[in-house]
Length: 156
Image 1: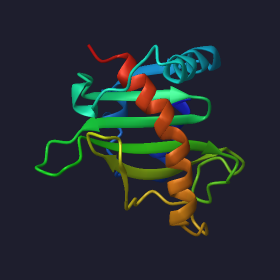
Image 2: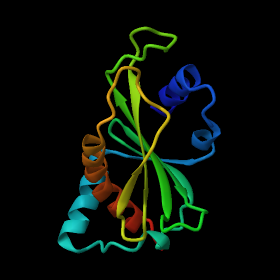
Image 3: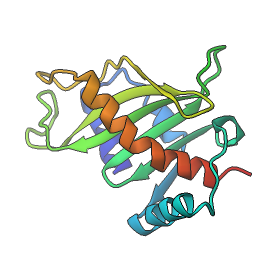
């Protein structure tokens, strides 16, 4: 899927920094691994930890049809991580080299030490698609428990 995303970015957003994806550590979890994390959180076997305890600084978290590029925030803001969610969709990309290829829908966000999210503006939009902030937040709210469990699981 990462290969399709990189190709999509090259075709549709040639000015995007594709190296952010290519230089990141790639981590893919399957459904049973996701379920294991969810069960461990629910049973109390896995305790959530503050985001700042996670030592990973630049990685891609992949599950299902979703990739999340995460980078530690280096500014003096309350955000600990900057993130870009890329969700593979059936939306057709008008500018794509191939007319009937799957596309990607992007949502940028950041989150603080308590995993509180703030949506950010993205320049990667699908032509003709109306950006729905409430829907974007709903998608992020579904992703964050998985991400929170994963980041807690890899914390030393």
